[in-house]
Image (cartoon, rainbow, N blue to C red; front, side):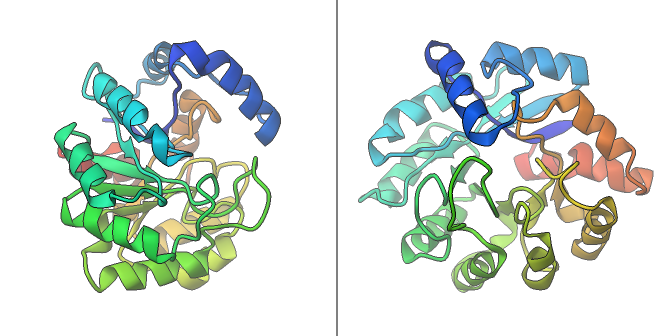
Length: 267
């Protein structure tokens, strides 16, 4: 089983203009058209069984529209969508409860788009309550190619978040994207490798030293690494091949490509 734990899509009405805008921001050509149909076509070509969609709520008032859409597409034909929440929401417990009522399995946080440091108390409150409701918490970590500095989830602040959240909740359902911190992997090794969180491998191939990637996988534990592509910003077929070509054991590759996510998602 292959599970892509990190993908993005947009409703058809806004997908074309959103993709064009983001392509300019990140200076990366999208591998799909950014729609649900485009993702499903990519999945068929890459033999991906399930894709997890991670919506980003950039304004508190987007909560209802984003999460209603997520609920409408999840658990159908290999698609699971998480929900989204903004740190400036005034009733975060009510909103997390609503995400649970929608039947969504997790939430996505993007500290750069949401302009809040990951160890801010607002995030700590959201994360610990989400974990108490048995939700997975996926967090963009490290640099975002399309946004200016400062980085709102660097490894040292992610470590502070883990320490604070860990005082109240089991942090094993926290997933830090991009191998723990895009373009900040030396600090990921310093602060985060060995902690009780998982990393997804999205948007890391071609940007980090392969030897460092293998070292981090082995040091952190292959059981805490999830396959992800950041589709449409990487091609699923190409990224499956990249994992298969890593100098890892077949057991480690199977764990990363799907077995770990299967346990996380209770599939």
